[in-house]
Each structure stands twice: as C-alpha cells, then as structure tokens.
Image 1 (cartoon, rainbow, N blue to C red):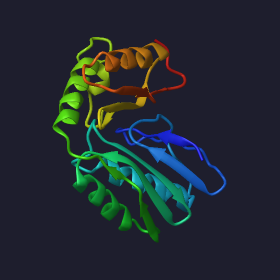
Image 2 (image 1 turned 90 degrees about the horizontal axis):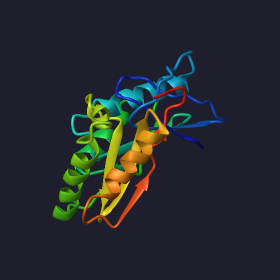
Image 3 (image 1 turned 60 degrees about the horizontal axis):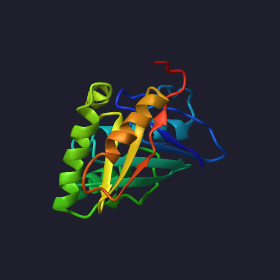
Length: 188
C-alpha cells in the first residue's frame, strides 16, 4: 500500500493497486479519471475531507479505499474533525463501511505553544511562506506530546530540508520527523 498526498485544489495523485488505494491530505497534482467506482469513491472521500471547516495546518488526514470500505487515518487536534470526517464519508454513495483510525491528539498547552512557534518558524521564513497560502496549506505541522512531524508536499529538496531545519530550531521540541515529499516534475 502506498501513501499518496492530495491537495486543496481537488487534485489527486492516483496509483491503481490491486484493491487498495491510500490518500493523505493535502496535495498532489494528477487528476483522477475513468469510471472506476473505487476511483469515484476516492474522489468523493477527498472532497468531503477537504470541505471539513475544522481541517487545518495542524491536522493530517489520510484514507484508503478498499472496494466499498474506507479507512480513515491520521491525527487531528479537534475531536469534531474526526467525527465530521467519519460522518461525511459514511454518507458517500457506495461506501458500506468506514474504519475510523484517526487519532485525536491530546490537549496540551505546551503542544499548542509549539504549534504556534513551528508555524511562525516555517511560514515566517521568506522561502517557505508560499506554502501557507490556500485554504489547506501544503505543509502540515503535527505536534504530539512535544514531538513534531511535518507532512505534505514541497517543490524541492531544498524546501524540504529548510522546513526541517526551521522546525528543529523551535525551543521545547523533543524531536522532528520530516515526512515532507518533493513533488516530482518541479524545479526551483
């Protein structure tokens, strides 16, 4: 199973595997096509997750479509994001079962401080501020008990490394895992 990230511009990287497809939010650049029912369900799931008003830069949502079963994964800061995602996906035509494995991150004032500091460190840097634009930024900052994970897409290996360095510069962070992916075909 391959994890593919999708974007706020309703684009989606699509790889047809045996029976399962995995998608994570936010951003890919290839559009889905065809009349495959699984592809239609995948597009609808992506759309519903992106439309959640509580989905933010501090959340990471992913999903896998396996026939008529959708597995939701990731981590969110707000419990309503988890319940809204499950509810929205349950109502998609053709979805028989939703396996909700989304983790709700524990409330923590220290983690909230780290989130704000990480946001400023990454998006306040002139070479990276463009990634904060849009309803769903292409870089997501997940903070769980002082441990930071960066997910999403960037245009170049340099931007990926810069985001990691900036994230590591924040005080009070125990570790930083840089899971940013470089979009293929981009040059800079």
